[in-house]
Length: 280
Image 1 (spheres, helix red, strand yellow):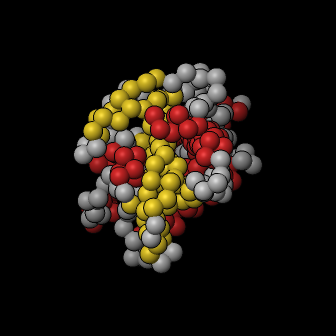
Image 2: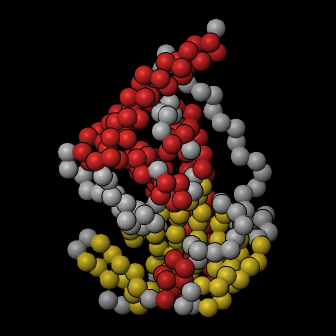
Image 3: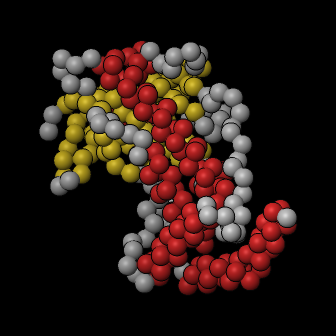
């Protein structure tokens, strides 16, 4: 184990914490949705940016700044990848909204999900346990503490002053300078970039007989398989960092089955009638 200089990245999906505490029966679908969105994020990262671990609805990544390398170029490459995966998240979110016909609370509130990115540069110790890597030290703690902040927005990129000075920030954009009080750390100066312009419009809803409806069928099949594995005990319980005490009771399973029945009997015919009327 040795001390290394690294760029740290935290990609955090927010928007479901309070909602899921009130609607635990929607957690199964929410898990699939968040996993799908995290896959979109990770699909747009590349070497040398490395996944350290998944943390519930977030991903913790890092890049080692090699001796003799160009740390500024490495930081700018990380910034390019962060911008790419935030765009990929938005695209995938809107695709899910467009093909979603499920009436459960989680599926009907996908638009609540927003992505935030936190970037920092510092030192860490990298400890390997089997195939897993654990990053220790104060700097990984700093980036995790910044998840709880006073920023009045749901979507943004946060850079610590150290990362901002190293990378030069986002070209053509002026960040907001702030100072956040981090528990056990003290004041941490940061720069915040907010989204520019309006969100792109939602894609048109899929018709019931459209060839693209295969995407909805595939997503629905994932939901059903996920539910079956959980009920048969072939899948571990959820591991959301922000929902550590969620446990499914027989009543929760009854509600899940009830939602399916209500959707098939009541909501699905209504959705099909509305879509047919639009195509006439």
